[in-house]
Image (cartoon, rainbow, N blue to C red):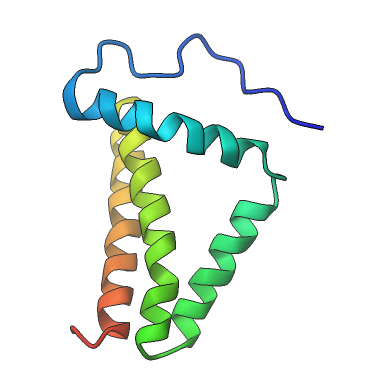
Amino acid sequence: MRRPLPPGEQFFTPGATGLRAAVERKSAAPLVFLFQLPRWLVPLVLVALLIAGLVVPDWRGGVAVLPVLAFIVCLAYLSWPSLRPVGRLLRVAVATFLVLLAATRFGLI
């Protein structure tokens, strides 16, 4: 049984143009797909990949972190207009941590 989409008046950012509008259009279908998955699946996969990235000290750990980084950056970009400054700072801090973690695993730092 599929979950209904969350209530809301707009799926896209009102008045968005250019890159933001294009990214929102392209990401709509994947986000709906992810929303239809069991609630526990996406967080479980992301945590497993993050733990693998933290535990494995070589390039394989870096590869495990990349999907987590991509997911976090994508969601941060999509939610940016509706975030307060503290939320924005938190997302930037998490993305920075993941970039540094991947860089250390790939031997760049």
